Length: 330
Image 1 (cartoon, one colour):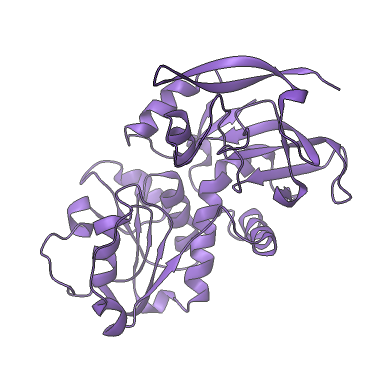
Image 2 (tube, one colour):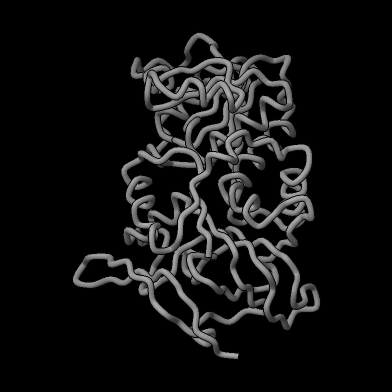
């Protein structure tokens, strides 16, 4: 079997990164035990970085991005999966240095593949995708650290983005009071309220410039996608014994701060690594997303794109103007 299929390819030409839909063959794909016909993918920040030539994400070009894929097993040499199985592949090296989900086919190692929970469609699985999985893993780790609604409100940064909006929906369904932190100070209040946020704060509140090592406690915990000084502010304004999770560095990868939030207030900083999350935990989190945590309020407002129309949404994400989720129908 060496059929042709469509893929979005990124090529490096004279220092510029060119996007083009190309016809490829199955034999062009990397080695792996499981060949999947992709039904849906989704757009994530790592994809936008890969498209723009970020060598910290993708080292070699030409390349097919897409760190998410959901589809049907077309061929398998693995004993774990058979032809016709409905599966999800997210994270690991997919779409980074291994050709990813912005194509009609992927071929991957069996250790990357998750059986699609029966409660989820391909479309819904990719509405969640890596962003939803990261949000759910953040909530899972927050609960595991002992965070409860009785301790007080939880801040979610990047509240209108993929991770943030899904995290708000899950937290509010669990009874938490949620504070939505956004770059904008006004607008989208109806959307945030529908997601489950009770309060909105602007970037200035979570970007303290005073230089003080501790601030007056304002929240009991946080889920952060920004990093840098935003993460620093969340930690030093957190109530004693609270937990802050970190899953991104959109703002900065640096964290210059004192140890006082940790040794005086007992704050826990929990890192979220959705890329290499162990498979037993990955399946557990996906099962929760398919069942009691399948509560995302904005499914009807998700943008569905073709490969050909994906350019526009990639550019918006690179400009940090994207909102909600963009999924790709193959």
